[in-house]
Length: 422
Image 1 (cartoon, rainbow, N blue to C red):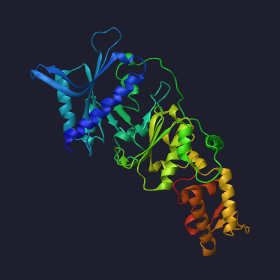
Image 2 (cartoon, one colour):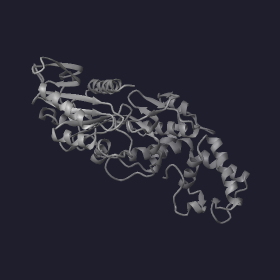
Image 3 (tube, rainbow, N blue to C red):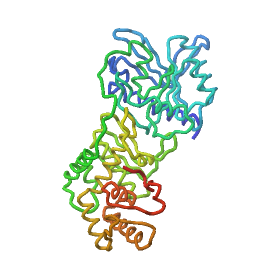
């Protein structure tokens, strides 16, 4: 695919994103009616110097109430590069913008990767805004006036750091030494008339105790009258009026991380991408169901799951962060796939079948001796087959219920060789 087509893809995706925001009334932070905003793609303006029209990728014109002409133009230049965007792109955009709008427009670079250090310095020096857009990224609810939901350091990592550990945001921006995680907050910073009193929302996500998450999972299981065997996750989605969709393709975010699944809260859709691993696929579905049942729609329009999410092992007690929500969804997934009563009952049955006894070392004891680890591995295999769950998830459940005394040498450090720990 040539660079022109790639650029057009980013341009079209970002244009549709702005239209969706406008349709929801979020585009200008709820201060003005969406009807006061006009969004153009491939907008042309006459250039006296060239005596010809100059075209811009996307232009947002914002009109004050009763004004015949826009009091603010935000001009977006889209650069869909797999590598960092070079300085020449910023210089070219600056020159083009200066010929048409010397003082009456805000220039914004929209990228799918990041800016080279030189390009970043030029953009900052010339007062350009910088936006990273990922059509498959996490789309959060517009921030309110109390504080931003997403921490500055997280948004900054989306734009300028060379290595990005967290999942991608759908929208992240920088302007005038400030970072923004929503288009509303970004636009409100550009003009005083876009700032004002707006509805307050929580500045932190509440901590959820394990008992509350267990209760939510149990109530969900009651919807399908669950009794035994693998939990029918498709049936649960139907009971919750969630459309469960599958794809045989792989999808990656702008940083190349594999997207395992997505939840679209307004449309009530869970999308599951190609896994090649049935147990992980089931855990991903249950994880996304958890986002719905734990009412995470209060914070997201949509969210995606990447493999890193399954490594999150605790709820941090602080301001809002994404890891807290992912941890809650992980716990819910485990509770949904491995319901306590049935899990304890089947563990006891298979334990007796394998002649695993408490000889003073715990309900289930394993060390490096074949007489201990071979029955334990069979126990894991039986439970894995019965619940259609991974052995790692079952080991986590053992630990959570204090059923396992693991004295194998690799475990002496206290670290479980699992996706994540609770």
